[in-house]
Image (cartoon, rainbow, N blue to C red; front, side, top):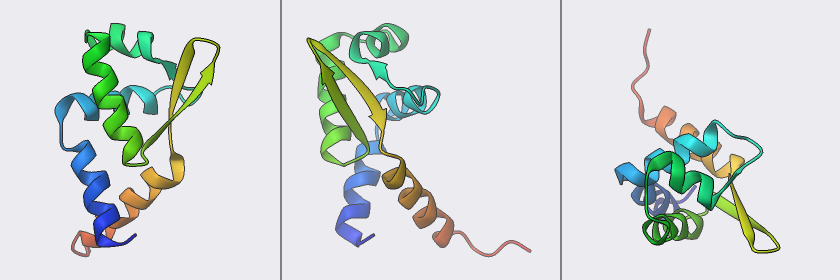
Length: 94
């Protein structure tokens, strides 16, 4: 992952609400509808929409539309790349 891509992804996660969204999505591999996320996180849907857009633009989540409903899921490879990056920055523990 290049530096610009890493910064975009880490910046998207550098907000408590967005990190909470990612945590909720991580608990639900099948994905969650925006309305369910809003209820679980006690957020107004308009505020949640902005956070979902930021996470989506960073490539961390993906939405699938079915009728009038959008179900959001984590993008597994992007999350794995972030994990690999952070692991590579940690000093060797022996």
